[in-house]
Length: 321
Image (cartoon, rainbow, N blue to C red; front, side, top):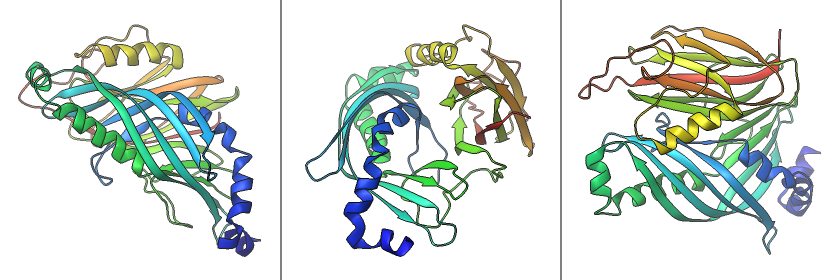
């Protein structure tokens, strides 16, 4: 059936098949963040978290999505910058079946992106905060950053073993997404596999990660470059949301309001850091911390020497041992 399904003449059929699962689009959008990068080959410099989503069908059958959310980014000028943003995307959705293993590649190509109401919330660097009041530079930068990510679209891959993977951009049929860490599947589902730069006195919140049933575990593989170790935490969504909201609203990093469910330290320059964290059903965040405000690591606090940590990580979900 691959040839028939992939045929250009079968586009209407493919659209009808996809329509049966598109009612889950907004739910899945709210269960993922968007790592923000200036270039695809660079580490993430921040994240965008959708908090509201509404979907409808456009007149031509495209998927039309309105969304809003919050996020943060780091630049040398502003240090931490937090923002809110709303917008709309019209997706030209389609799927194809790969030749080798019959994996399904669902493509969501943006036909039109309309971002609006990008607003800077907090800026850590006081001089940059004053400068942003005199020029729209900050808003223009933010619109470019988030809108650029939206224009890449995304690919959902369901492989022959029924594993799902979401990748930003268009992944060529039969190819695998670019991954920061080489990890096996072993029956596990990959939530995120990437690279992030966590600057001095900064945190990075990876989530929300949905664990659908008890008896499961979060499998974390990581490596840190940059000469500094980092703390890593796992927190349930309720406590992590408090910590994330605090991070978005207060320019300087603060102590965590509650203790994490699990904590460890990723040593600098040590390959092979792997941990299995059994958790009950629920929503969770993995948090990388490069500050002295939480955890056991106390990185040097020198305003003229930003000891950034480059973290490669893979987060998978699977059956607890």
